[in-house]
Image (tube, rainbow, N blue to C red; front, side, top):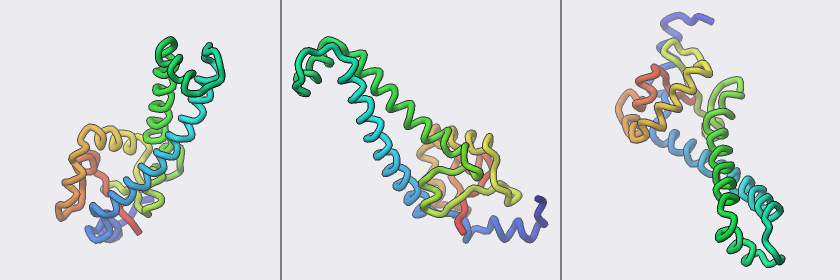
Amino acid sequence: MALNEEWIQKLTAVHYRAGIGSRILGFIYDLITMFFLWVIVGIFTTLWMLVTSNAPGDDFIFIRTYILENEPHLFYTAIGIQIFVLLLYLFVLPVTFKIPRSVGMMMAGTKFLDMNANEITKLTFLKRECLKWILFPGIFLSLRKSKQSAADSLTKTYVTYY
């Protein structure tokens, strides 16, 4: 859907762009969601370690010590699974939604627009997320008057709220 220049200017106006407060709120929501996801996955990986371990006895402290000393690969595998699930949450889950954005962004009420005031594509979202994690201190550039971080400037996107 092509918009005329007047609507593009209205939709991408600076006062509709998300500032540092909205971005931090979405980030906090994402951190809380990731924490609960990590706890849930941690419970399942711990149960998996207890079931697959060859530890004698049923004392959990002894089993933990036994696994650390004799089967550390179980811990490494569990940590790898937990990191993999968190990466899926950060990069894959938002792409599965109709409008690519994280759960924290949905809760904070922000979304992405490109320079033509259209919602961004999934490929643009992935580029932006990769740049965001590489240029993490770039979020502080959103304190500028244009309210764009370094990743937003490079991918020519805006984080807006309505």
